[in-house]
Length: 186
Image 1: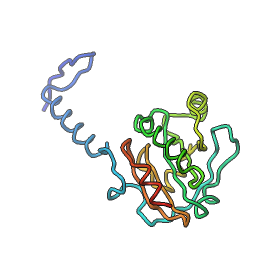
Image 2: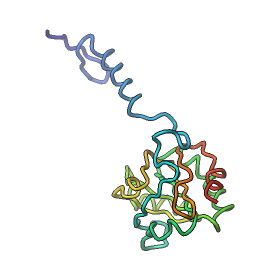
Image 3: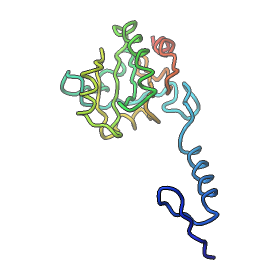
Image 4: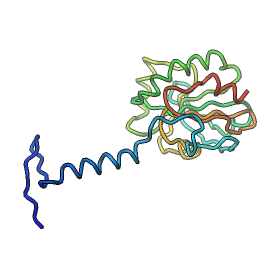
């Protein structure tokens, strides 16, 4: 069966009768692919409580130079990791809470921002840090090794490990209670 071609705004052509079906299918697919705001320890979100992830070595982008081998830190003291991006709105909203957590617990908990290698570059991140310095290291995960090791499903994903290296908290989104997350590891 042939369908008549119909011109739709901006020079696009679609087959008559199909725009509604295509839009409905696109909306259904988006609902499956784009997650709703993720809550802490929601089923299937990142690592399970009690898991003991292995660390990876990541390049420092914050002027500290060199690399940080997370396997040398995990299991020696509590650790908080935030998977982060310059373009992440949730990360921006979470930022003041990260600073507060660092101010309160920075002597007890090793905190790291892990910049994911999606739609950003080390150069862009360094420029961002010039205007928005962090009191804790910014690490570059350009090949996704840390995202895989910590099962990061999205940016603004937080993983907290206790001093034994066990996961005590995971969550994503701007509304996380970082105070409670950090206390879970102490």
